Length: 237
Image (cartoon, rainbow, N blue to C red; front, side, top):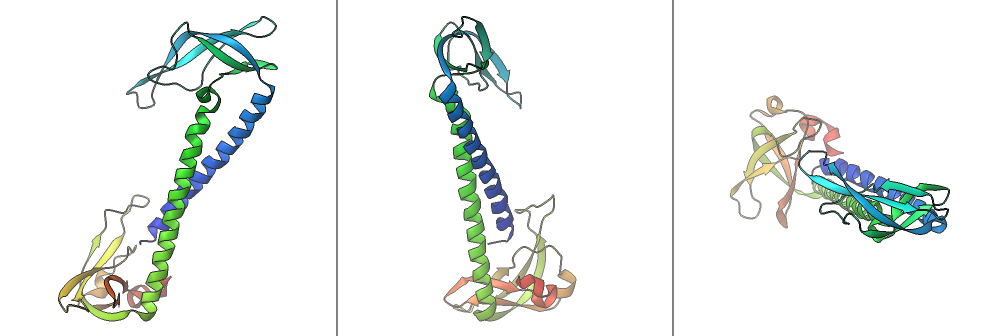
């Protein structure tokens, strides 16, 4: 597996862990809020339209009015918005509010109390799992490549050409892959071999040369192209 997956996996895992940390902080904040909050009954007085960031859709947030235990009237708009709207204008809804700051209120239901947490938490877990999976698979693949370089069956393959792999893009640039042709160790028929992604073009150094391909004799589709003679020992890392 190309080393790029190690970096991609690391980025995904870091984002996921940040989401998980954020969701943990939100859970603690919501727990403390629920312990001190006071319940009241509110009324949805308006549905506030919000246009999506790309401008293609509209969602609606409930604007809720309620009276605190002193009789003072407060009004706030939910942070989250949905389409279709969660409530209808005039609908009565349960409210939780902070007695020290009544404007800090939420609708007392699962979405009102935990909506953001229900989004960020699973996203964080998903990003973390996929990121770590990429890292583990890349490290496992790198270990297999090192074993093949040490003990694989060597095949001399004739250099054909180098191409830019547009399937992989990093910082606006595409890596190179070396293509060579050698014989399959099991069937003896010619077959194509490709190198791992590299970030220099070794065409000039490889003209009219052969490259060493280290093949797993039991599974010929598992191989690694040894370009250390051209790229130096850094290629083996």
